Amino acid sequence: MKNEDLRDFIRNRIREDIAAERIPGSVTTRFPPEPNGYLHIGHAKSICLNFGIANEFDGVTYLRFDDTNPLTESPEYVTAIQEDIRWLGFDWQENLTFASDYFPQLYAFAEELIEREKAFVCDLSQDEIRETRGTFSRPGVESPYRNRPIQENLDLFRRMRKGEFENGTRVLRAKIDMRSPNVNMRDPVLYRIIHAEHHRSGSDWCIYPMYDFTHCICDALEGITHSLCTLEFEDHRPLYDWVLDNININFHPPQIEFSRLNLEYTLMSKRVLNKLVQSRVVESWDDPRMPTLAGLRNRGIPAAAVREFCRRIGVTKQDNLMETELLDYCVRNELEQTTPRGMALRNPLRVDITNFEGEEVELSANWHAKNKELGSRILTFGSTIFIDRSDFAEDPPPKYKRLVPDGIVRLRYAFIIQCEEVIRDNNGEIESLRARYFPESRSGEDTSGLRPKGVIQFVSAQNAATVQIRDYDRLFNTRIPGRDELESELNPDSRIVYDGMVEKAVVDHTAPSFQFERIGYYLRDPASTTSLPIFHRTAKLSEGWKPK
Image (tube, rainbow, N blue to C red; front, top):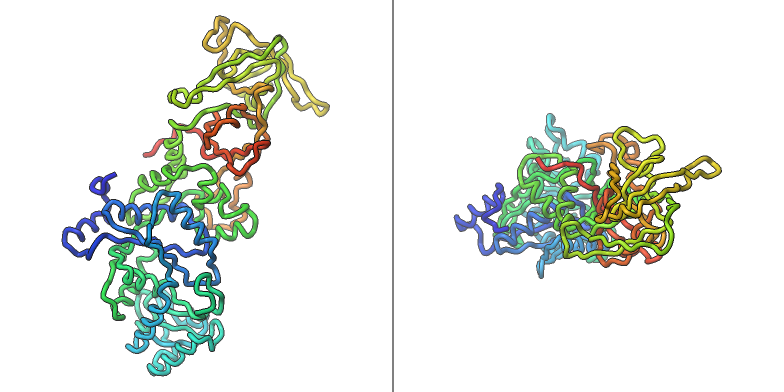
């Protein structure tokens, strides 16, 4: 889509800046993730916005890792984030940077603030700083160390840098205004002591800058023309501007906020997602139930569907809660015309055809009713077939149109059968069915005159492949999780595993995804073995939901 076709307040601002010649060079954006976890679908909106805008205006986007906390960051997350961005279809080219690349410059700017009496070393503990910061209705209280002489502050800060002090004993704070109505301006912490190995700089540093101090300076150093961030940083913008206004730097990007992506039945806090992983509620960060981009990818959701989802959401300043059905809608739209369709049984029930004799009958079926380019496959019908247990009922509910005792039903692409007998095991459970078929009722050549009300799936015994089918549902039962205890909000049926059957042709096909008729879209796990293929449900079939 051309940039003139997309209209929102950020793109309009960029057009105005270009027209007024306020941009030196090309439009330059950045995506600055912290490598302390995997990216989730909320990040996708920011990725699509930052990289999308740069592409639309022939600009560039920096992928800059905010690696300023060695206690929570790791190379695993750095690699995963890069894979996710590439999967979404974007490329930062040579513009890969890390906040740690700028540690020397950041430190020098911190000393500059001290020399200008704009920063001081504070000995208050973290709890004491929190207590003296005040509230929205009560102003803060100045630190007793706020008016230390410049040379004493420089000496202490340099000794912090050398590693002379323990964690938590001292911090560097900006000297702004403890009575400011914006609590972020009440002498915020700029540096803290962390004696820990950094994933890139090793043990070179034991003091690390805070995000609010780091990202504005990195933006300026990289020539970011539009610093785009979500609305929770709106109250941080005065601090962003204050830092750049009080150091010797010749570029001052504007910070522009937009609403974050919120999704029903989904939590996107990396802290909470990490807790789910650590407590083994899910198997890993890329578990198909997770809202991470890696999880969505492992569930079979196409990158194009995520991009379309973000496009439909749009860019506004208004917080909103998106329906999960919209994402499913985008997924189905992407897969509908290109995905082959096959038959699958989650709970197979054996059916013996009492009047069938001889060789199995071969039947031809297209892989897709409308897309003939996908070709066709051969099914078979013989003396033993399997149907899904949900397609048989001894005591059917109203309007039930599948198989019942003495009733008839059509097998998809095959014949009409009639149930003659129900076979039970020693516990009284249904073990199998006995049925007869009508040879003259072959699909496409039916001369039987029978009019069954329903059509059901089947797989013949000789044409069946045993598989594992994994159905995924919402990880949380509550529409807006996080308000109660996490454990009480979890959906115990978020993953249901079936020992099922599919046509052999499905297993032999090279397509990564299939639509299992009447069930949903499924991804074949590329890591599963040929002896037991695993299929992950990507999305349910449409239930008539459409975007408003």
